[in-house]
Length: 443
Ligand code: PMP
Image (cartoon, rainbow, N blue to C red; front, side, top):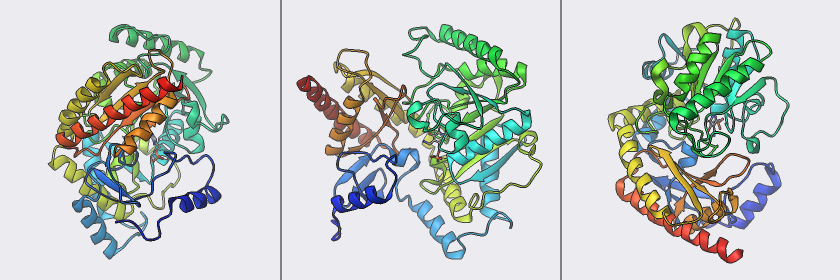
């Protein structure tokens, strides 16, 4: 229902007057979302949208999932917060579940409140364990917004400062279709990236602490390396004693369909030393965390706690949400419905000059947009398609490397149905055709 007090212009003005300029908003007429259910959300004007971005992958299962709402309400009615100075049953239970699922032997779990803080902790552990502040990261990567996370983020559009407490060396591997190794087959691409890694390691002044990498780059535009690449990297890293941190903030919990974690597509050399997670676990409640072998996790020699990390309310959400995802095989749903969605999107994109590539794993699908008939990334095409999709009742995201947001990102809640996948693909098809028309008439 339309809110009586609703005036989007007024709220936008107030937003702009009090919040930072760099806190970007989507859409020329930004949306105020007031409620959601399942895979849908409603705005303050009463418009309904199919949600294919899920609050940047935070709504893992569904909006207002009754199981999560109930668990949160029951916990909130008892106590909101105690801090980890006291025993915290929901936290121990969730840590046990995650340790078991992580694949990391002798795993310890530490909860934070965001992906940024999880990666920050992972970097602190790796640098302390190895006695070095040199980090290997992937070109085009995104790892969060703290000072140290920004310092290892390869995507220039999201690293607002070049000053960093860490020394970062960037390696190739995540972008298949652009850059010096474009066009190589999987084996040749992997070999070229391993050679690049060895070359970069040769330039490192002292020991390197860790490689941090997203198995599928999220903000970078849902690009994945060939299966096995990080396993091949891992063999090189192990020769030097360098740790592997897998940033699973976007790829965890079965979203990639074939695997529960993104690293499992690279698994020949075993699990990472450190795994970080956040986003989907709390289905909208802010949980992040780090999993590491006990030897690595316990290398800190002073106390360290996150005041809100592990709070019973967020842990209740995490336990209920994860139990739901496992009981309903949402990983299987991501594989099946994600596969179908990819097919449908490839079909609607065929014949459109603005779509250069449709790619994805499970329910993480990226459409790379270009100026029609060229290879030039087109953030304008992406903006036009985003707007047109919204007009059609579909919310999607944007991303992309090379400082240009030219990739449409699609990551719906993992309970997406076949009918909703078909509907979303049809809306996006119209939106892409409209964007292409707009671009060609503008030229
Ligand atoms: N790592 C990855 C791969 C991410 O996509 C993000 C968020 N987009 C982060 C870390 C940071 O997480 P948060 O925004 O919760 O701090």
